[in-house]
Image (cartoon, rainbow over all chains, first blue to last red; front, top):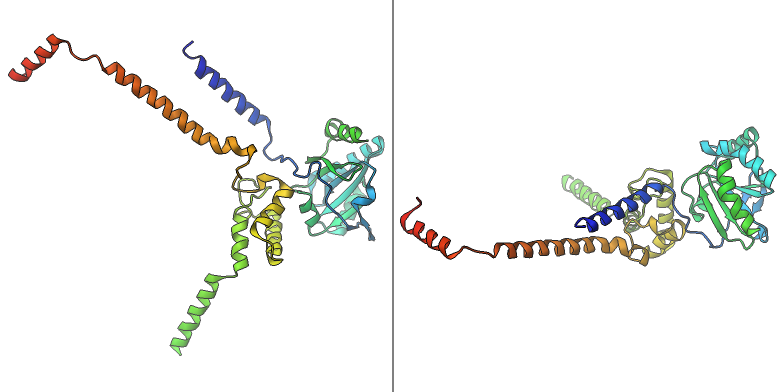
Length: 172
Length: 143
């Protein structure tokens, strides 16, 4: 009985540290959740006379996938995203982040192109407005043009099924 | 000639030391922002490409005449409060800020209780016989 309080404190500490270990400190919550998606207005890859504009996508739920040819996980993600987007009927737009256009186009030709269109963010300033801190990152944007979810890191089939698709479905 | 040379050196040294005021502000702001890629470094210390972009962004915004606080807010809106290297005092950080003082208070309370208990334990002093014995020893020296 004498040790009841210290033991309770010890258990509380173990619980707190245990919960802390479950969290990945590299995964930061997005500051943009429920905020309007920042303006993109950048020329499209392979169609520089057109621009990707967030406001033209109003009324639809879409994904914004930040990618680059120099990013290893992006390469693996591309064919998977192409398959899943086609299967589930989800529109994915790309943001080609700090990349060279030639390398980006070559990557899409080699590994498949999951994007309806990709905007070119050569200096990374659109990425900064989206709070991008690592590539790839995937944002879910709702019909009102608000960011509703952000997944940092490569999308796998499990991530798609458990995280992204449920958010998309709940907004449709 | 020598004097002129020395003077020129002094002027150069002074101008380097004084530097560009915007540069000094940029360095100070960069030291107050966290590099979100390498999280235990500030933007000023980090070599990550994103940190270089953030420094460039700070410089551009200062050149546009924005205040220091406006620049910090710009990054906080994009990366969240975590991007501030010094945790701001907010409801979400009350625990963080108050925990050291709370722990100090608990420690002091425990210490005071222990000292008080020890004080009480020391209270029973010598009996009358022991006191007489001690007085005798003091008079005559130990047996």
